[in-house]
Amino acid sequence: MATLNIMVGHAQGKVPVTILRAEGDIDAATHKVLQDKASEVIKAGSKHILLDLGGVNYMGSAGFRAIHAISNMLSDEKSSGLTKSAYLKLLKPTDAVARVIKTLGFDVYLDIYQDRDEAVNSF
Amino acid sequence: MSVEQVFDFSVKASLDNLQEIRSYIDRVGARLGVSESALGDLRLAVDEAVTNVILHGYGKLDGIVELHMHGDGDAVVIRIRDRAKTFDPSQVRAPQLDTALNDRPLGGMGIFLIRKMMDEAEFLPLPGGGNEIRLVKRGAIRAGI
Image 1 (cartoon, rainbow over the protein chains, first blue to last red):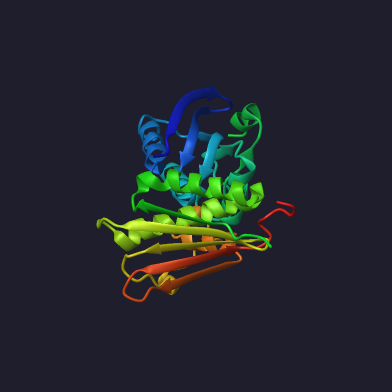
Image 2: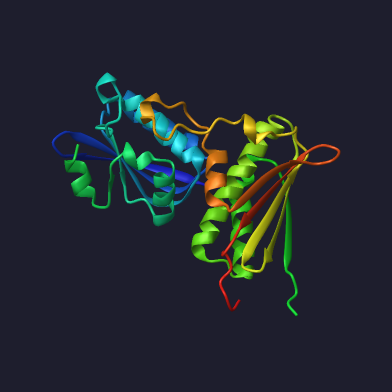
């Protein structure tokens, strides 16, 4: 079975940002690990999440379903519509994952960064 | 004369085996000389197809998934067989990609991804029950292998 570990970090930009670093494969067997950890930090008060995908070797549609659910958990009425999320951003997806992000149109609604500090300060 | 290499794999239909199935695609892909880019597409398409079989075909029932992978010229052909209830992909709604995430229903991306990643994707009922998914990726095998 695939393994997925989620590490939680914090950074201070213009606002406090919670960084979730995913390591492993995100498939239908493991996506709940990501979704549950995000739910946990949101319930604990996190309002801005940077999802670091640099350690993700594989991500299928279940991973995108989890990202979608996290975006919904963080959103409010202000963020609905055809604007990019002010609350969830992605960091360093691999080329393969980035390609699927584009195929599914997630890049239209979620900002993607390669540099951690730039990402943190963008919130 | 070239000898066609055919690789078969049979595994219990369980989400816990998805990684093993992706590893099978990687192993056979390496033997066939599949490019890294095509291998990523095949890995994704097969993972999505088998996930559908497990979650929506067998549901809570036990079952087996059989995979058959071979090269055909520069193409890779993969057949995935199950004994689950008949699956009709025309009943699956396409994801609303031009709709904001907050306004989209969750999920529904698997079949869409399979069709995007493959040159051909056929979903066929098997005589006597079950389904066969036939996937073809052209230009996948590097020349000279």
